[in-house]
Image (cartoon, rainbow, N blue to C red; front, side, top):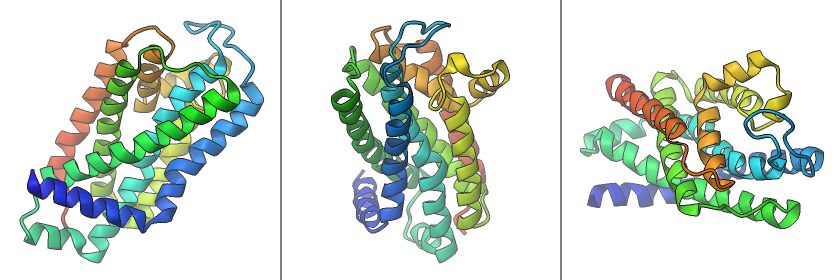
Length: 247
């Protein structure tokens, strides 16, 4: 545990020196929220299971999920891939740092970054656009932790498979934009063609979004969606432990 906390503190200091990572994790989701809030901010969903729900009551928790996804698909893979290219991971291994400590430190740092992003988005949505506050904050927090675990595992897996930091960035950005478009974080789900909704349901962000939205609007914990997110994270973790490369 001492090594884990020391690694986490080092990662926090390194993160503070990488403003581009923080800008992408915070600024881009907030910018998209502002744009979509200006377009759909005063509308309600028309059809489907969420008919009658105010769009901003959907968008605020869903963009908490988008912040988490941005960490797992872009920031974290690029960060770890750059570590490998510079030989940092090799030095960690020589110092006796295990995969579990490395993954744990990235999870703790990502939880903190995602929490800061969630607070920013929540304040913006509630104060500027009149979104409701979370009805069940503890259940939202549970979905937030499970979603962060899932996307951190995905991020480490992407970093393990990407040959370079530039490749990780290219793949991660492509995946992030696909997630943005088909997971309920861009146009309302009831206005997407059926094939796009089906594609979104095949990707983890859709299930993360629903697991965050349901307790936010008072529908309680969606255990099915939460289990899917946890299962994806578990599978990604197991695969990562097999394919992770220190150099």
